Length: 256
Image: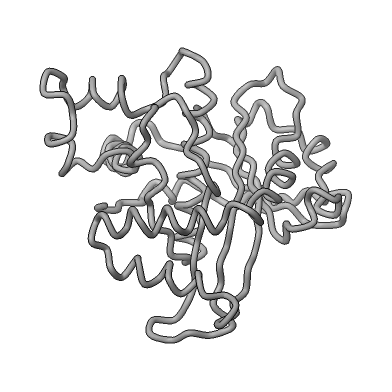
């Protein structure tokens, strides 16, 4: 995948911090896109759609009777209006944005394999939302990091649900599904002959013999109008469900 992430210049740390009821500081980021910057918007759109189907492969994959745009809109992207398409589309956008932040700002390695072989467009991809790695090349160390992130999005102002808490609670599922998610990622990387990626995943499938740091995180991505600091402050990582989470953040100001 050819990567252009100039859109991350529009993502800023507001400096605001919401303190959760368990005493954790939740950083608030804001994404403020410049719709008039056609060059960056176009590159961002390409980056997004290539998660589902690369520009280099689309001519070989799509139905020959459809244009590239028709194929993406009808068979690859979650539907714009038909449920549950809108919520899945918002969720995919949120996951990709958080992955961009973790990879290009926090400098984790994140193979992008989650969406490209979906069979049904209007269904969420199975497995952990984001799996990220950090290690020195050619070295196996106990300081290597496996980061598993759960991401939730809220585009509706009508909902009072604390989506950050939902993400924290759902992160507990990653204790069970991370092995399956790593295996699926490894198979897709092998299909693409990405042997560097295969070896990277392989290192983190050897935890009993080669321990590493395992970190869980959760993120909420919401529209600015639906952001409520009081609701967010009610989040906790010390309940029976959320005990696995050790790091979380939130983004706001997103227009889905």
